[in-house]
Length: 159
Image: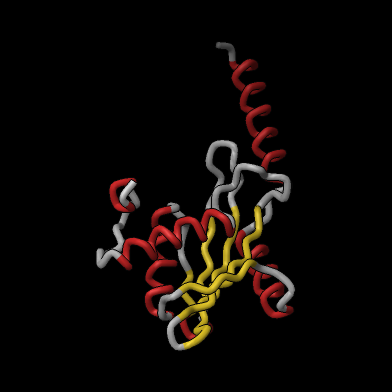
């Protein structure tokens, strides 16, 4: 391969990367958006589960491990956790905030606010639906008297 061909390929590779990342929001930007949405109370998906807040926190952290998220920011004093996923194959990733609050003596209220890095991304796996599916798997494991595994395998959930 000639030097000119190599430079042309390098130029087009850099151009493609710049175009792909051009519409991609940063974790910091999306975290700010998520916190604003939470303050207004006009967003997110909330469900109540029959676990105390410590168990809900434990399950939440397990879900993030199972989904191979990036760094997890724990804000226990403010009852929330923030994490993200990066670009993998066709998915650009997302940022998610989870609030864990006591609903009553025997239940916790879990609220999720998730933002995609690219709004039109249809393949991002970390969203409210995925989180709640995994959360319910974790709840089932705890209710069976087992410990939450580091990695979620089908045999961990009786499947």
